Image 1 (cartoon, rainbow, N blue to C red):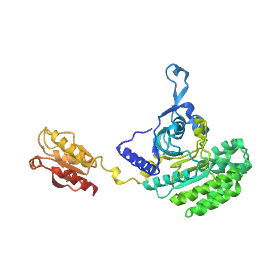
Image 2 (image 1 turned 45 degrees about the vertical axis):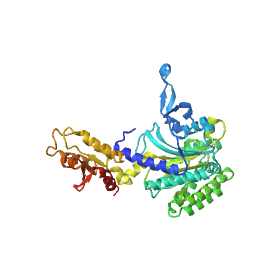
Image 3 (image 1 turned 180 degrees about the vertical axis):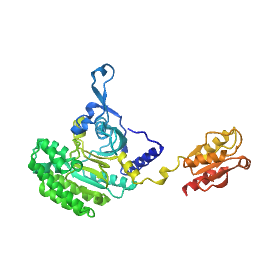
Image 4 (image 1 turned 135 degrees about the vertical axis):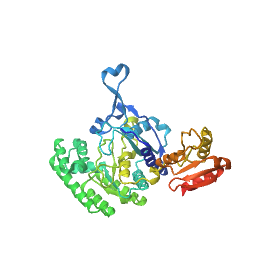
Length: 451
């Protein structure tokens, strides 16, 4: 859990602004939910590993001595969304599209790009089983990353029903499917041998494990040689899957084919790679699943999928849903390390600083600052007035302060300017002065700032 200094906040607001703007272009509406949920609302929704990372809040008052918990900090934004939809279903449109940018908390071990308090940027569509939803979500995420300056990124795409079909083809019993998915989800972290060891520890037959891992290795090898041709790779991988699975698995392959086809219309398909090993550990996914990766980054920039049964846990009837979450913190880390932020974000906290020349005439400077602010400029007023009118070095001291703050301009009303009804504007980088009528100063600064 961290503090954010002004430069950090500007960067965060920039990224959040881009995300919100893109999501709104796709017709998504904003939503906010409380930081605290009932513990029973959260438990049982994230799988065995996720449940261990929930920050629990101990009972208060008479129940404090029990050491038991009844509330918790929200773990993600998806389960709170499901609760909201169940609670307000009658007030929401048939197809509810929402985006949400808020912090979540996980009792995790902090490491690079992973924090105990972090923001998620979620976008979800409720009410439709059409794969148009998946295509638009992936396209929106693609647009966000492109707007932020990411040129190379990969959207790993798979399907829970395809995974189930693969597990069945590998001889993994149905009651061990969830255990197998938890192990497979670690493939990119622990490698083939690590997954094989976990399969064995969970009692999954070696024959099935060996078949699946060999299949994953073959697909990964093909992916490494097909970086420049995603269309061919995806077509060939879907064909391999189609030959391996049947029934629901085959229906999942057909959905993946349609998602890729639709994403070809929006331009997102060039970033998509079918990845049969992608499992995502959260237990509520029911259909297509996806994760976003960039080169040379351990972990993902975001992920999501279809979860048609989750809302039904609260509502008592099935409500289809699909969403994707972007990890704000990791996006910020990567953008910072790769110098991807616009130069203006690391520039000044103000457009102009009004300096103080006269002793006891702060009202004069405050009046000018107020006029410039009313014109839409960001204005800092030097807070201290001199003990006498323009003592030696006093003006220079203020100019130096403004430069150290990164403020590009200073506005001065001295004795000459006061008599003439003008203001002198100094460009601090060049030390050039321009005397302008006071009524024209705001327009002059606006033009100078815009370049």
